[in-house]
Figure 1 (cartoon, chains in turn brown, red):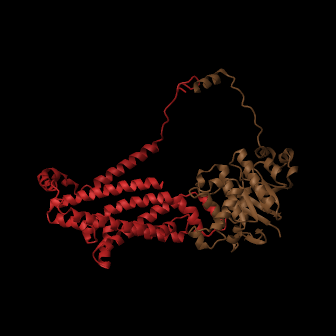
Figure 2: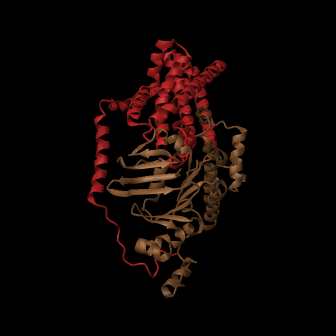
Figure 3: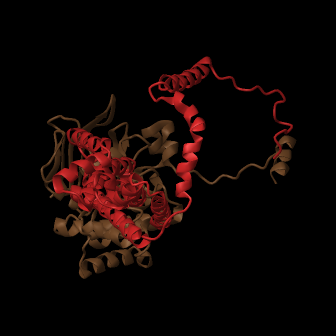
Length: 279
Length: 270
């Protein structure tokens, strides 16, 4: 059974076509990177798969996850809530509830599974709490369990969000620019946490990324989007700098991590004077 | 860094505003002046001279208040505590009712055909003064504190639901989306995504309303809805100024204590 199946998905915001007849298939256990410049439709695609937004109302558009339709022809499936339960979603801005404890945030991953009334009363069993603690231990932040989520660093918050997706026990994990607002060290840890889920638990991963380096390092397959269309779908190692240049032209610069260049020393006397004035 | 540096251009000019800014100010100013002038005669403001010509009467009246009579202080304090208790129940019921009403009147939580009717209902609750509600409830449930509780409950629900919904409309939608993505229900989204975000503001405005309700409850007795108001107006009507003064002092002290306490509680909430 195909994990993610998208048929001719189109989405128009106003006059702009954010997605134009995108079709793709992802097999169970696959690891796919989704790259593209800002506005190329990566986030829009991911949010369609989890049923957070609806496509244009055309009979052709269809999104199926694990054989279950999520949306078709612009309307959500009746059981979209059940489908969401089986799709873990990681956001660029983490989307944790800042005033709740990290543990409670992770426990919300169980909401699709526990009886709704018990969920509303925030009553979780000891086993459920232990499950959440194990998830936190796996991403390495068990010691923060009782802190408010807002007190964590960005990297820790993203790992808490991964723990939330872990207790959801979803077979499919989508991540929308999970490392775009993180420093390089945190980004590496988050990418490793995500890869571990794929390797040890067989979770299907689809991750949108801004930089092609991460795609090459962590993902065998890359889908490149350009102006809402698939420009490339194939092995990541073939996406060299030259190939990106061919795909995106000058816009390809945005997709490559800039080399650290040295800041030139001030030369003119005026600039030097400014320096001393500041000091 | 100094403002005058070698790189800064010598000649600077003040930015000029266009004429519309001045016209706008002039318009607002004249509108306020017109409203004040137009209301002068209807409000009988020309009688301000009486404040000075009849100053003797006032002094005589006020001197009655200068010697407060605390002989019955135990009775006054008892009634004052009852007044605070009326405010506690009136506010407590309103807080409970305002949670659903507040969420249903938030445009980011409910569809417009729910939001608009609920908002209009809350407007009606707010538009009618506590005293008017108290008169109605005295007729319905009889004289006494319960009528006062009901009056405060309805009026406060109108106010709190509006304030609650304003903070709900200002929330960050991303955590709510995070909860929705786990397969949660709409109620889960509210319990986990919305309420934690608005809680500090909700506590703060509820405590503020409690303070206001203690003040309002001191006059509910005027229409027989219980509390110290009844005692106060009886003593004023009976020309017992010394007793009235004692009651007023007790009200002022209590309201100050409640204000101080709720201020401290508000700090804890945020």
